[in-house]
Image (cartoon, rainbow, N blue to C red; front, top):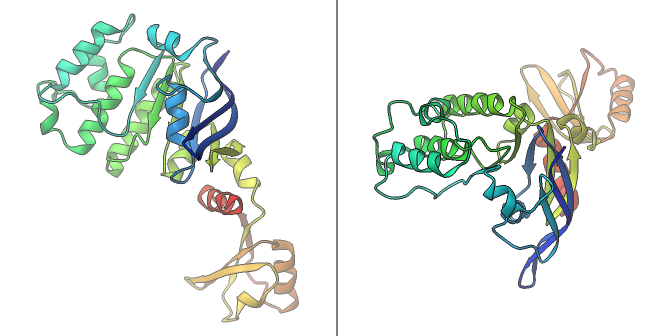
Length: 290
């Protein structure tokens, strides 16, 4: 079953083309990370997906219908990066109100436990820390048991321990067959938690696949050898190198040529060749689009 279908989606702010002809399909039960630099079109795309911004061209379909129909049926939950908390309201007030709005909500106590807010039901939003406020937004997004959960920079205000707990809760929720679409600047979170990664840049999709697929798109490799105090920057393919704990770490665009040159120079000792991480692949892809 298809959860999200974007077809030739475009949007402009005056002369600025924020989203350009995006076509994207997300299956039910997928966890998809949306990556991209500032201005890539992530927020605009999510707003159109939620039905909060009408596309200039193209269509948005959620579970085969309009975003408005999916929202009316309680099938969408959204967690904004900021805002959304009514002043002078308590945690319990907000969750109780939302519990009464949705057709098939989870109990308030369950939402509190899922977001690690048990014991804070009587606290007003003004007295919440940044991390607690973000966890409340998560509880507000999931209390309706939505089939599609959209998260915009969900861990921006959380410390390391809270981020780990958040992703554990998210994976548990997604494990029930729900679809999760999230944007993040923490690339390690995308690598660890997404089934699929979509990279946007300048309003276009420039990569779409698993984390391994995205990494394979980039022909850069890391070549590591025992450091013999050589000027490795002169070797073919090497675009950068560093020394670390007796090892020379070379970044190469042609690892075969680099390894051959190391052998010819009698520098091939304790060799290790690896692919780049998601962060390096992401940076390389977005630079290529610049």
